[in-house]
Image (tube, rainbow, N blue to C red; front, side):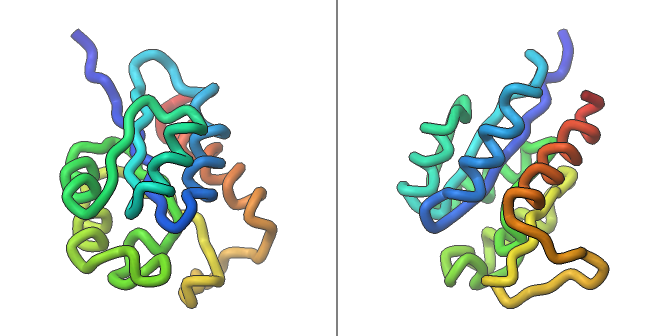
Length: 141
């Protein structure tokens, strides 16, 4: 039996970044990948589920639990920062995501006050497209 690969999309606030990542990535995933989402709040989780994620959960325990089991994690850069996403990311959440053995694909955002040197400034839509492309490449698609 082959290993089912888990792609985990994380988000907070209204789930806009996460839901766009779900829409961009879901059509590209083969049958051996399952697309899960975890939101820091119910609105974020609901938006990602509405966008097409197979399953979703909400909150700190869900993020810690699923980050440890994921093969690939996507989300805004704030998910690896304690206090990220306007304070929605706890220190435990940030530690679980950053400490996960999963490949992490993070979308830069000037709104979190964290910049990555060498990343060109572009529109959010372009960052999201690039993130989906990186995830597809990582999964061998």
